[in-house]
Length: 621
Ligand code: CA
View 1 (cartoon, rainbow, N blue to C red):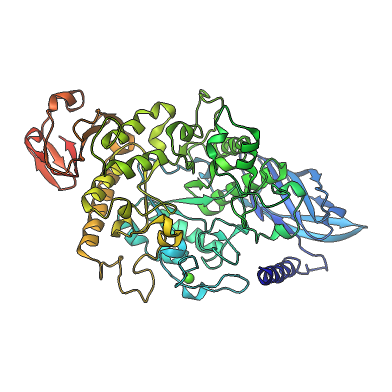
View 2 (tube, rainbow, N blue to C red):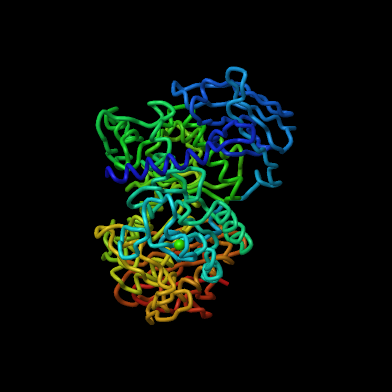
């Protein structure tokens, strides 16, 4: 630990030397964040964080048409200043010079760039029910550039033999395989966080950010990320950025010299969060538990950010807007949503939806039950006493239900009834159709493992996720039956995608070396995901489901022009199609259909057998 600390300090010194490099006339350049901004934003205020030795002893000054310095704030730490700017709507793009004077000398100068906002930026459309999201852990997908596996100044070196180490995957690796991703039928990509994680260990997963404005050099550069987004857009693939407001990494540069004591939530001794998110909505919750939940640290290497600090609050809000504008994002996935100050999160959401009305943001709400999940979702009538304005939440209750349902015999509450009961509680949401639904993710045992490595259950479960309400998200490698149990360690559920490294013997991108089962699974995913792109009834159709009977769950998706019928048979034996009269409010007497998974026409669906542990996806003619 001591050694690591030494390296951290050395590295910080190196960074500061670079940042404080001598400006043309002997003045120095402070660190300023956000490093640049845009004209033409709907919100005209901008707050700059300025960091340099003794900067608080200087008087900042700027002259730029349409820009006004309206407030200068100090924090008690002489090395920080916060500048509030007003950028008038008619201010033009350009370089705005900010002088920092002391004793009639200019001590620091920052040439602040105001870029022209890209036209249409405010109207961007976020990801939605017409998408299937691919979740990729960039360190574990493909090593597009072995030259960046180890980078100067970065503490952790690549070690592909260590399940918890860095394996060398990067942004280029994902960019190189966009054709595969597109052909598989994915229409959106969520990468686990790509920002710098300069921590001595466990830096690969990305959730301990040490620079909120910089892509980790082992993943690539900011420019690489922007080019990646552009390449995705050329294929019609949306990009969702994973952001973390709750905590930073211990190696963040500001940890050596905090703007103020309350910049992070500090405790007399290390105090971990109790991880009990239900306290936020619990009417009986003790303040002690609530405080520990929100202000306790996520881990020893993840200091808890204090969003109650006004400067921190502005810092985070502006950081998210900066990435949306800079990279051209189509969505945000916000990590550990319940762990941050909820008043702040609501304020953030209001700002984002004011700036981008049709954007989408999904909050990770890892909760067991429906109500305590819905508590975080948008609620116009403030049914839980407030409106979070959050358009989408992660639907963990549906994941847990699907994890159990396919293994169980049918009872009043088990088997297919589990799925039914989760969806029957959708009255809790303003719009359950925007919930992100998923068979597994980077924190859970792999889906194929959860299905007991049973191909029938695997296929039936996927059919359910592709056709029920919500926005399906599929974790990389699901399509080639990657397995792994969470309790053995996260490294085992985040293994390298086969074929992502030159030396790999199996290549899932080309199919070389895949087993027959893997090829079959890959074809199945490809078929359904590509079909789903065109199945507009899954994008905007309502869900009508029927109470499961005898292990058969039947539901419909309906819009003005299309009727889709899904039959899931959870029995270990084939079952005759149930009498269709019961479904007539949806079927309207029709009997002809096209079955999607088998790609065949059926003249009369009333006569067919539903094979054991399987689904029928019927486009009713
Ligand atoms: Ca690499």
